[in-house]
Image 1 (tube, helix red, strand yellow):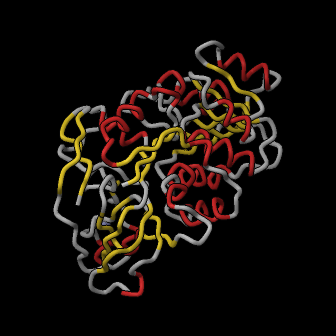
Image 2: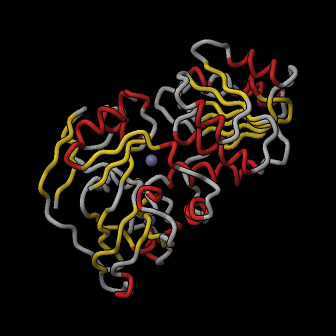
Length: 339
Ligand SMILES: [Zn+2]
Ligand SMILES: [Zn+2]
């Protein structure tokens, strides 16, 4: 099969690789679409410590091509999406067959070869059925939605609450849509570039703050009558954004932190106590039906993903695709690959 392979920092090339095989409990999925996530871009940039060479990618749907021992052969040909974290196969939970509860799950495409290829092998338990009405390209954008859904689940947003979403990358935009669907009142979003604001407004943002031009803390204070927001969600992973979360939230408010980078500052505990805040750390999609419900939101037309897709490439053009996603040139938000 053909596969995109990261061979070093900012080096990606197409290679011929042996076809994967379905071992017991696993299936081989023929990949129909894949999106480049921020994690893949960071891996390409050398900002994540994973070994080269590596086939990247973890957000993808496809059709089941072959099944291993113990997997229902009727699955062959079924349209599916794939949850992105692989169980370790060795811990007590995995040994007891509870693969979904594995505490040592690792993201496919980082610690094992991923989906920027014609085929990939995954455990049967990672499959999510893809119903009629959800196209392959839509099902390659489920991960930001599922992470957003996990955040909204945990925050328990109430109708009319004021919400701030810091950062409007794919996860930030997904959260803007989900917070609007959850009944947020004033919905303030920030970003350092204006491109995502048109989508954010379409998806329910009431106020867009360009942090390259305006002090976000002052802007949020002004928009909330000096009190701060009921809920602040940090999605950007930039230190300057992480530093202001506690300044933007009201007394007894809630804060969620999703944006990830190695250089984030520590969170001070004094303002946490002084403001009696509740803090939520969001480490992923939660694995509690968030993928399945994201699929349903897309199927039901509650989330229209088209505006997120700014670029589409064939697998042959993988070098250009990664360059675009990494530099965010020509207004890139989501870059989709068709194998
Ligand atoms: Zn991802
Ligand atoms: Zn395990």
